[in-house]
Image (cartoon, rainbow, N blue to C red; front, side, top):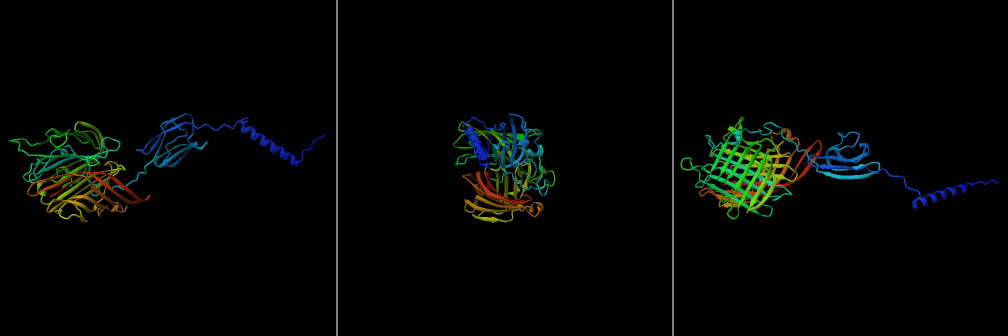
Length: 481
């Protein structure tokens, strides 16, 4: 007798088989199909150079099995993943996934680097670059030059001792008419912390003529090095490296201060002022500056030594004493921003500063330089409007600024840069500065110290509109008389 399966019986049988299979799978009698193993691949983030580097690959795997999400360059990758492979030009969030199992290795975040338009690398769009050994030496012994200053300043970096502190150092050969009835050789050291800490001061000494007694500030130079000496403090070196040694010698009445700092300039000098078309070092009025200097060393306060590291600037200026009746004041500030940029600002005033708040729309003696790469490339903005946002009184007829606001954009001589519509708005505010008034008949007032910087910069290019907030710390110096 033959059994006949009706259609309904066949369906029921199939359903029973499926149910039985599910039950057996659930209780473990039927193993699940093996999943592909996820190969171990380790990556190292190089945030400074915007790349991810393979440091380990456990087995042979093809890059075609790897999905990379985000803005980056993978053109340098071969067929197989191997140690030291590099994913370059990473911007924003980068996520790496193993496609066969949809497993996420990790996500790395890179700061998006904005490419600020730069000035053309030749005058008049950009200042001359580079110096000679003669430029680093003394000029005050030449006819027509009787004032000369060597500056070293720095902002100490995050995650280091004295983080956020600023230091300003200057070895000064003053013109005798600068500080009437006051000693003309000068050493300046100020050290300021983010919580109001203040150390240092100014020493000024009589200058002899070399017959009865020697000058306090002595300068020796050769093709290999320059040596500045002021009592037990000194500078020794030559571009690109200078060693600055400071010993207190009554610089600070309340504390003993000492420091050894190494300044390294990664790029060429920038001439900010000169009165010659060529051979700028032979100018009677000149100034050059190194920005983005790497600064390392130690600062000792009352016997406690601190290891420091930061970014700074070295500047060297000289001029004739005949400028004193013309120049009524100046501002200098070198700023280190949180995004790695540096901004240098200076301005000379031709009118006496008697009004608490004033706006200056025409500033022919202003300099504003932005660098995103520690001085390798520069963006100069020549059209600068300056507002003295706040100030304090030095004497009955004289005030010095405590807060300055700047609005800057390309000038008429920068037609190419003007096409980008660059606008910089910047506020520079003194924190507790070192204050000094020198001279009797015609006093000179100085503020030196730490400043906070905030603002923004905007421009437009082929990538669209850019609007970047700026924040940082500056080392600032103002003078009024």
